[in-house]
Image (cartoon, rainbow, N blue to C red; front, side):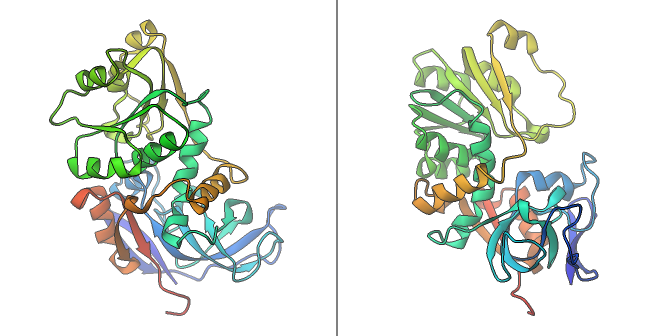
Length: 325
């Protein structure tokens, strides 16, 4: 079978590797499935592996973790052979033709949603998990810094939960053009407009009740979030940060009495199924989130398109061959 191998910074190839084998019995009491990917999509958290930033060890199979496919075999009771599920591999090791994953890291699909939409339940579930940490967003003015795929999912979720304003900020107009269709009430291009002045105008000088940092990595924007947040407001830091962040104005955060929330590791019993339910019921329409699609044989181009934000790329899908192809 094939697997992805990152051979150098920003270089990935498909290589031959031995077939995945499902244990005959659950490992340490945890049942597993042999999973055949059908459709995946790239995430910002895949980029440190692809770029070999040194933040994480790179292994065979990096990096993919948002995947829908088929249960080929199982040693448990939760699924049957042939079931189509959304699965999240451990440590983002999902760039395989087949792989073994715990059945507790997979959920059934909602058949009311097209497969491309159902796939969005993985990133949407991470957003829902994070928003549950806030006391509530009804009637709140919320700024979402970063209008990539996660920022757009925040737009949709916040609008669905009753935020008064959802203000999207990004330096790329190509991305901002999608924001209104995904829930933003206003957008600000930070390359053309001072975002602090713009948010002040939109909130009558009060500034935002909640600011979501959806950038992370080397471009993190925590200092901007401090400026955009009102006194006693809240910052939800979602973007995956570098290991350390220098130059953060913690004194200003203290003086404004801001609360900072972080989030990771959504729940497979609650968060991902709720995201799948939202999509299946049509509570959120994520059609415009999907901008590009490639065969897995074009995985290098897929990563380049996503990482370089070609043509305002948001969600970049990756098609796997059907079994035996």
